[in-house]
Length: 190
Image (cartoon, rainbow, N blue to C red; front, side):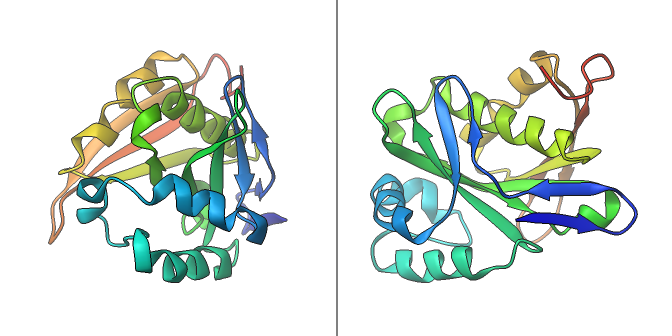
């Protein structure tokens, strides 16, 4: 599936992405139980989220994620290459395509793989893919209560692949927003 919007020339393809440690796979029916197993944990992390796919909430989450058209979202399962295990998920939100951008959110990694290479590699794979497909901006929006998810942001900027600028958006729920742009020296590619 590819998605074009307006004159921005963003052609975001909903395809598998592969890195050194991970593969990101578009959500498909055969992944349902593996994703459920990866995310059915860590109630404290899900407590601040607008969705909670733990336990009985998973089927409603899965239906919404898989039922949404790519013009709204593209959800990925994150699979570790070393043992072929699904260890989390992340999503492109495509509401910014008309402005040449996409958002990345609803990211979750199983607690057993946090603080390792999984999160930075998953984010860099998604950033690189979006920029390669013509995006000029990728935005992360994270609840300010979610300190753990804000931790990798400095390492994204230090990767040399992107330049980043952050803001805090006050409201009923305060969000920290990080916008990333392709590096002038690499055009977002390795």
